[in-house]
Image (cartoon, rainbow, N blue to C red; front, side, top):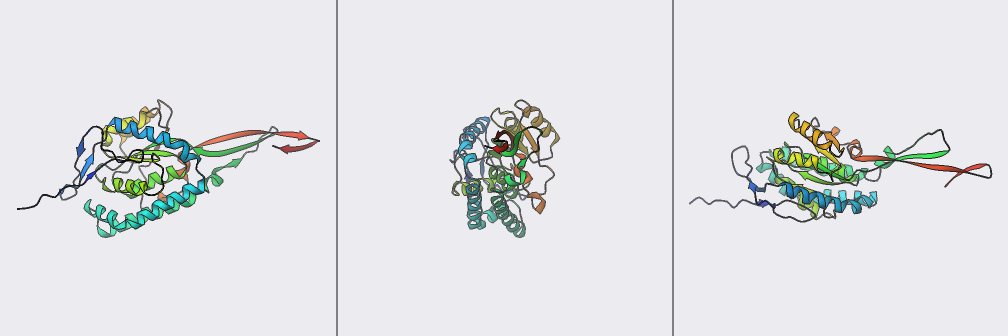
Length: 294
């Protein structure tokens, strides 16, 4: 008799825990040959809401971390991913990648994490400014994290696109809720396991699996989400996100034309996208005829 393989059930990742979806729903993605890959959670609106609560609760502590410490933690994620390369390569092979493509995707993902780890304590120097003003004031502009970011990850890559959108968001002190690739979700939850063992506080990164068509509107209209990132070139979904995001004036970013496997897919401007620029005015006081700043 032919043995029927027991498919792995991949849970979702919310607040540093791996719960099953509250809806109890699952779906089974297939590879190019029609082979079932796994049992994946079909996340619900309530799952997303709980993930946003976890992300908001984690935001204060994560944004207050020293930038150097955030860099250390991103580097630790890269270290742990390096140690589990074989597992990620195997999952990419299951999803239809060639051996060369799989190895290349994992290697670039590791390098991308190291790249953004290096930027954690440098981007503020690059994007800050001392502004010339006509009054007797000092005027400074500095970037600060925007808050909770909802991300609909690239659908055509399992690992690299996911890493490429998460890394700059958390490097800048934000927290996030990410919807993984619907058709290639295996690496997303395995990457959540890496995050869970890499000193990243629970709630900083939350990973859901499910259908973009069902969840996109919730990612965009939630009133406690400060920015939304969408990585596909779907005109209808783009319009939906723009309309829903207007409810609380979210920032919206479309990364539909980014080729994630090239050098241009990594730069500090991806960090800047989810930063707010705070400008501070400070008076210059005259003391004994000389100007002194306090």
